[in-house]
Amino acid sequence: MTNSFEEDVVDLIPALNSFARTFYRSPSDVDDLVQETLTRALGNIDSFCPGSNLKSWLFTIMRNLFCSRFRIGKREMVGLDECVSDTRSAAAEQEWRIRGHELERACGSLKEPFRSAFEFVFIDGRSYEEAAAYFHCAPGTVKSRVNRARQRIADECGGTIA
Image (tube, rainbow, N blue to C red):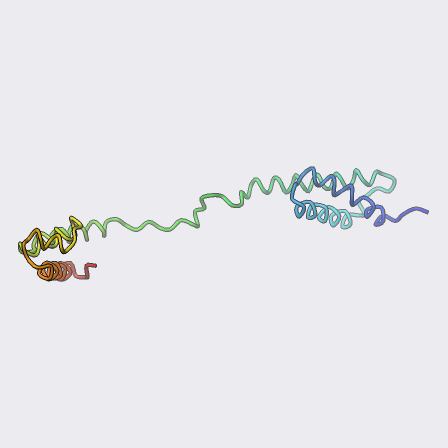
């Protein structure tokens, strides 16, 4: 008794799995390729010539599917390291330069005890205690001078200085 076309195809599934493993290592990719091959074969059953080699026909379908996937995959380049859509827009530098010049002007216009305290603490990065020892005054006086300097700079620049 002869098998039907569908039964012959089912009998060839282990051979299709083996052939698919020559293309892919991942079991899920192998299963996908076999499934797509079977779907394509059953969808085009009318193009199979009875009496010809069914195994060769299925293997040809699988090879062609793999080649098509490979070509499409090369074009798509999924997962590129640098994607244009991931980059953020660059902020304009002109505004920061203008703000920097405003800050320089505002610092330069400070009166002497305020400017020197502000520069010692903020520009030189020293502590209030060091400034107090340097200027021979209490730390509270240095804090007051720095705070007033910050306030005058903020007023002159039209904003707040952190």
